[in-house]
Amino acid sequence: MDDLQKRTWAEVSLKNLRHNYEAIRAAIPEGCRFLGVVKADAYGHGAVPVSRMLEEAGADYLAVSCLDEAMELREAGIKMPILILGHTPPKYTETLIDNNISQTISCFAKAKEYSDAACAIGKELKIHIKLDTGMSRLGFLCSEGYYQEGLRNVAEACALPGLNHEGIYTHFAVSDEFGEDNEDYTRRQFALFTGFIEDLKKQSGLSFKIRHCANSGAVVNYPEMALDMVRPGLLLYGYGDTSGRLGLKPCMRLVTTVSTIKVYEPGTSVSYGRRYTTDKRTRMGVLAIGYADGLPRISSNKCSYAVKGGFAPQCGSICMDMCMVDLSDFPQVDVGSEVEIFGEQNSICKISDAAGTIPYELLCAVSKRVPRVYKD
Ligand SMILES: *Cc1c(COP(=O)(O)O)cnc(C)c1O
Image (cartoon, rainbow, N blue to C red; front, side, top):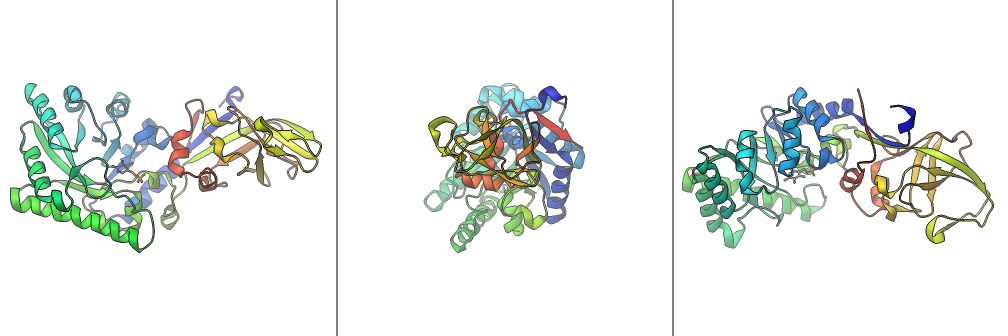
């Protein structure tokens, strides 16, 4: 990277990504497929380079949220099968088919629309049926009162012409949270999912090549739920409470630089709103990162960032393009020095906890203005 760009950047380690992929592969059963979730620009890491790496490493499937995300990958030459987890307007059915993109089907009415569109052009759309076993988001209802109706609806959807039912899946609500209640809930979701698939087979003779339910939480906490394919997102990028158990490494390092340093007398207020006042002679640095880069403003005054020699407390309100840090204890840190906002030294969880959010949101928030720099 040339010096002009040396403001704020996100280093993405494809080596760590490869390491995480191999480690997760080694933890799942032999023969189980691996789907890498690369929605939201691969959780901010860059969907194209991440997908290229996964393709090269031998992953089986990719998942994205919408057609635009899928087409970005196809236009970049990614050949692997792609599953769209969200909705696609049925008028794009031909685009889906021609680009070998599989579509999630979450109710009979939509199945019918895709079927009609596929039949009109004499082609076949690959679909994955989504069951709502307790997430209460997308999917065919199949809980108690809806069970029989659910079986009928799925069977009728799969029987429609122009649709090839390659897969069936569900999504867990609390597989990444601990405690008996959460474990119980996840096990009940899993039992409902597998029981429903068995009944579909018994009642309608239907079977699916790829049954999948394991998101990051389940890959680590419930390895027995891997079925035919696992579907990790966050884990692949090396984050989350459970990533340590597999020895995974975070793939992104958000780095900024010190723009200027000034020394203030005690009693000097700093930044908008005057929400911080120095209580000593303070050597204050201005960092070239703010909420427009993805640093949550709500974490103002609550975090410290990694500098050479330790962690410098952030002081005062985070501005759009800048924020301040107390460098009094770090005389070796100078204008132009690098500061790690999060990465291997400063855990992203410290920032997400301070902001009252989760690592997912911080990764997705790293904005377009922040160049991604690929290492290895
Ligand atoms: C986002 C998503 C995943 C990946 O979730 P992680 O918690 O990041 O592993 C898996 N499946 C579905 C349906 C998703 O929407």
